[in-house]
Image (cartoon, rainbow, N blue to C red; front, side):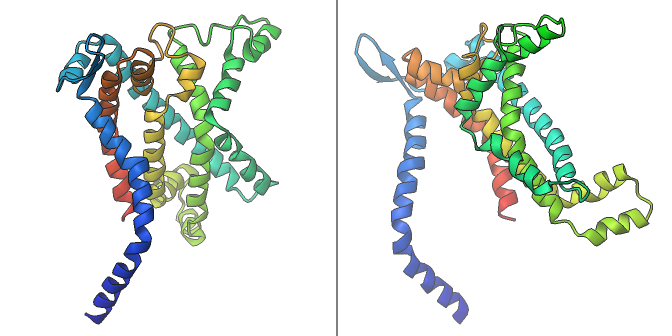
Length: 290
């Protein structure tokens, strides 16, 4: 009982020191969130030259907007495919970097994080140059007698071209986290699996993956949230085109708010995006607090 009272008194003494941080957190996070949600219930009327309360009108308009549904379907595909590909490639790379037979392993581990450390806009510009009709990739293909497609102008390729750049950015972080999980495994457990006659595939599926399950879930949830909410890559590389072939919800919300002068409608799209990722956020918080 006394230890509980002591902990409570220590918490009360620490509270004044936390107040400045709480104020900064509220200003930087809670206020924009509350303002964005409230903004979705208003619309700018040119005649009145002011914002007018319209209730749920912005949300009802979404159901009659084909661009919104195109952006939503693109967002789901973009997130699922990108995160799945990131995990597969990153797990293979982490396994390779964890091998004791790899020479200069430390150097490769340090180099693997470089793409993630670069600004996303810079990376987007680099990949845009690579995928231009007269860019580096098509020049390489032309060198071997192959005519490259319009990576950024073909409606069937534009979204997946942007996904390549997104995966290039995300793979280093996922790799480092999975590598940390692999390095935390008990060597005796792996040796016991080999002694019991488990094949390499069985060891991976039945021993290693279940052992780092929590790390995998946390990493996948973080990447899913970041990928779903990210729009810099698509904005720089295609701006949602051609047509709306690579349009995403965050980009569509940005265009409505700042380009089409419909901040209320853009805020409504942002609220819908928030609701869609709440499940991933809740799962992430649950895994972190275990």
